[in-house]
Length: 358
Picture (spheres, rainbow, N blue to C red):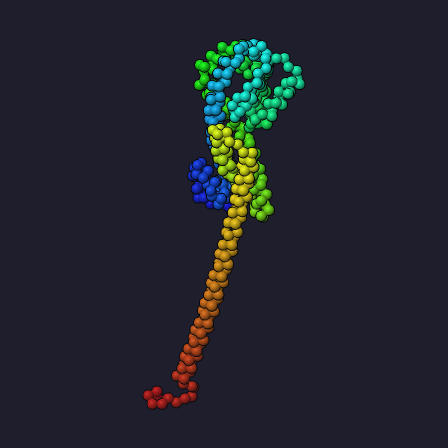
């Protein structure tokens, strides 16, 4: 990649975030500038992009969570006749097993079994949750969570979770009072916690995608015999993910309101980013070839002009030499002429003077 001057670098720095987003989507010829902007600016762009993505996803999730919470509280009040928690142990409806199909886009299947279970039974519940897109399993001493964004099942003991809030015991009425009186606090806490958690999860995921795209761009450039730093290819990889991330946001919003899903979205997400980064490298290569041809044309023109100037100087030099020789000859002739005249005017010794010369 060619180096730009200071004015070009200043021009890149002045571009705003949303202008860079627009250029990343529609201007392939700007990817060379993105490659020159440096890791600092690229990292800032990536953080802002992930933050906006996370903000929208978190807002959508909390909105759906608020709707589901209403149903959960209602179901809890009508169907849970007894609930007690003490010393890290949960008891629901005298340890009877309950299985509830909630909003599948938020919690999925909710299983409650607070009886004494063997290790094999606990493992069965874990596998059952793992096979769900989203799910919650409430056992006697811990909770299992499965989220569609993660392949693994998260586990946490009640004691570890509630001890942070100095809660050692609970009953049904306390939980109902908490949900009825502190919903705004619940939503706020859920939003902040979910935003922080999802930001780091998405940032790590998108960072890995950007590194993979950077490697792809670097290899394609090398195959085309282009010298490019990995930092530049990484920057182009980050910007190549702009459109896929925006499409992902649209997909999540559409999925949240309509429930529409497609199993080929991840393929499309990956394919678009690959197409962007390869196309960018090809365009940069094409521009490089054009610039190289222009440089060669200019060099050829300069060589021609230099030869013409040298030829002109040579002819002028020859002309000056001829004029100099001509002047020398004329000067010599003039000198000889004067010498002859002088010889004619001077009388020889022995000659007699005549007339007035006496």
